Amino acid sequence: MASSVKPPATAPSPASPAAPSAAARKTGASRERRSTHEGFLTHRRMFWAKLSGALALGLTALYIFVPLPGTHFGSSWLGYALGTIGALLILWLTMLGVRKRAITPGRWSLKGWTSAHVYLGLCVTVIGTLHSGFHFGWNVHTLAWALMLIVVASGVFGIWVYATLPRALSANRYDAEGAITERQMVEALRSIDRQIHEAAQPLDPQAAALVGQSLEQNPFGGSLWNRMTGRYPDCATHRAMMDLRALRAARQRTKDDLLGRIDALLARKDAMLDRLRQHLKLKAWLQGWLYVHVPVTFALIAALCAHVVSVFFYW
Image (cartoon, rainbow, N blue to C red; front, side, top):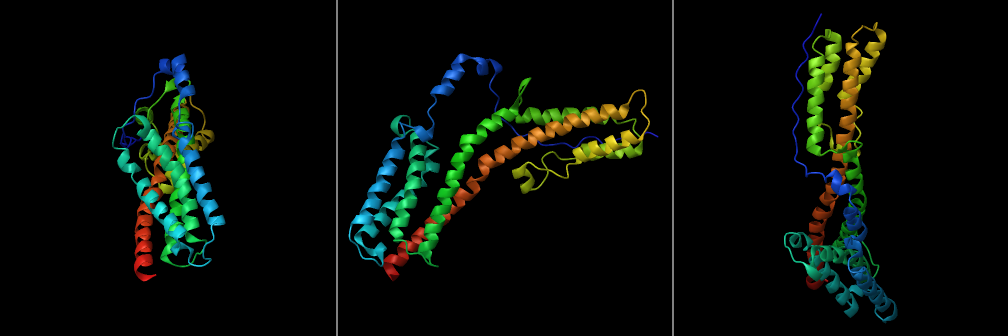
């Protein structure tokens, strides 16, 4: 008894930048560009790393060797100096988002600005801690210091993300046949769904219901946790494939082996889904850390303003 299978669900097709050609990847010129590429961490022979390190060491030496009051260190001349330097640096560091929208080559290129942002951001943790005089409590002053550490920690995580994940993202897009973009992954899923839908028309109701689970699945569905981990334990396609294999094993093989052909198509779709989900997971990690870094930065500025007002008017 034949049963008609529902047509495949329509999935959105997000745009994706075109992949580099195979010829470009095989040329010696491209290898030379990669080998001579200077990243923002090593920009100008790590000029900003050296400058930030020297600044942190100099201020630490002042804190250690200059005789200052043991209590209320922040209200001493060095405490005020450290606080002013730290506050100005924090405000300047927030300007990177504005800087990304401007094009200025040379010394103040975006790469140079980003390098300064990273290393001076790390230096701020030293300046802010010295400014506190290591006196912490349940107050707005310590809140500003804690938010500063969260911003810096999320930024360090962002550096790791940008240093490692683009390579994994590129490797996931390439196979023995060349590169495939996100759009092509989605189109490949649609093509496989059409083939499954056509092949499954003669199936009996029990087998057709199993295949229908896969065709009705939204490849972009799932929770935020699923997207961030790339794990989909309730994947309808994988479940349909395993259930169809169990059904095929329990039945007598026919000459045309229709279930075998559909099983092969489901296996192809399952592999393509894994590839697309890995792609989406890497993209989520590349962008997701900013959802911590940016909002906490604004919270830090608010806490910093409260800290300054409370010191000058209520201290």
